[in-house]
Amino acid sequence: MPTVLDPDLAPTGKHVVSTLVQYAPYDLRPGNWEAEGDRLGDKVVGLLEEQMPGFEKLVVARQVLTPRDLESRFGLTEGHIYHGEMTLDQSLVLRPVPGWSRYRTPVEGLYLCGSGAHPGGGVTGAPGYNAAREILADWNRISS
Image 1: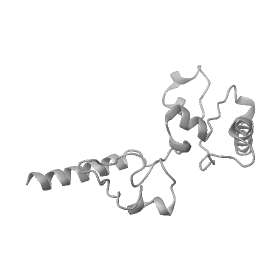
Image 2: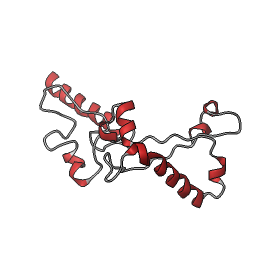
Image 3: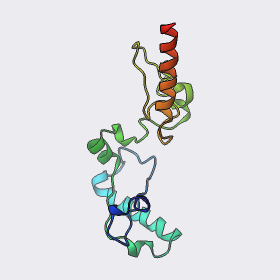
């Protein structure tokens, strides 16, 4: 609830609740997100209601952002907030792809430091910190 830290995000006595549903498919078969987005929102609110009875009555407004919405509004390819799947074949030295791990790319001096780099999205700041360490190590090697 971001309003716990910043009460100005909602009227006095109200809160904003954000819920993330991971691994929603980009393409639906059958159907499409325009038709199914609200249904997903209903399902999520229903699940929250099961855990927190009375929750549904407190909802004044809601917004459902589908993978297609995340792509069009924020440039997240296929709605991936982690810039790629968080699966074994895209983890550790395989993230983002084999040969591009350790934050380096085939282009000399070009480093990766976002969610697409190890350890991936959801570990705030870690890819940037790790990339900075590699950059400094390379710079020290070149300078000496």
